Image (cartoon, rainbow, N blue to C red; front, side):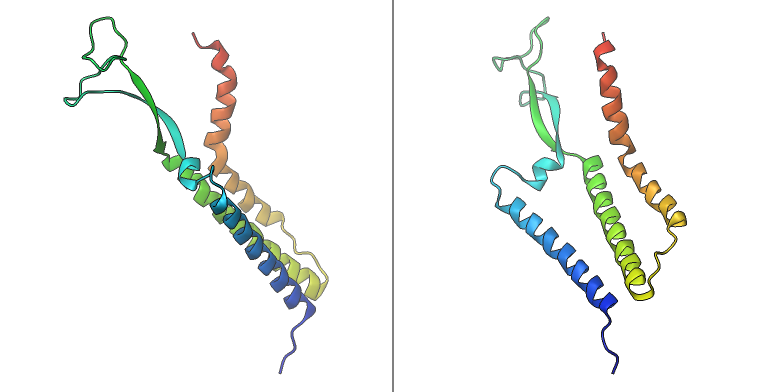
Length: 147
């Protein structure tokens, strides 16, 4: 019967610690009254208030008169880009943990750290998921120049 090595025990403990910490994080978010995943994955959208026929209305709820601005309402709507970014983040997290556990196992069992120079390109490609957010934040710097 093969005995369990120190490397296997260490990798199992780290994997269990990652899972337990994620579960504790999830539990603390579920218990919070002011936070929800639905709200976090939604964004503010400005909509024009309309009557039953679909015509825009003014602030008093009456039909829109010429020269009167329509009533706008800000509501939270689900954002597919935020959902995709969340799924990508979870996938990248799993890959980092998976490769980290494999490297930890190799280091503790063989005493060598694997060459990750080729793997780094794979991880850099994961940054592409966040490019739209980086560009959006960068473009907001120039919003002071809008007329």
